[in-house]
Image (cartoon, rainbow, N blue to C red; front, side):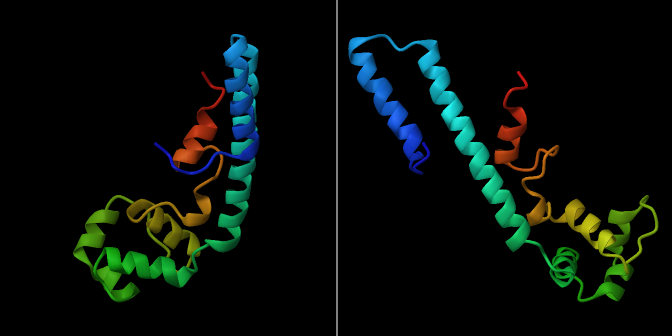
Length: 139
């Protein structure tokens, strides 16, 4: 079970429901109110996390390259191009332009992970928080 404390508004609503349940039945309207509080709070948290990630977690091109070099056990771009493992991994791909950051980002996504500043982007199932955000209301 998650140990992170619930937001104060949500805790307050749970207390109200608990007290109400002692004298009256909890209605679906009561539960809907609680659910909407949780959704509003998670939307606010996702927005803050997204803003923080895009400001603080964007990898520099040198960091992206180093991660790819490490993945293929090479020291630089020349060794990467000559690596049999890299050649096999990129077989069938269009010709790579190593002068473009876009190429390095694509390679990073393919063999390392998603880029840190892309973890909360809409339209992708990139993290558990984005899966929850994407999945809410689509059922």
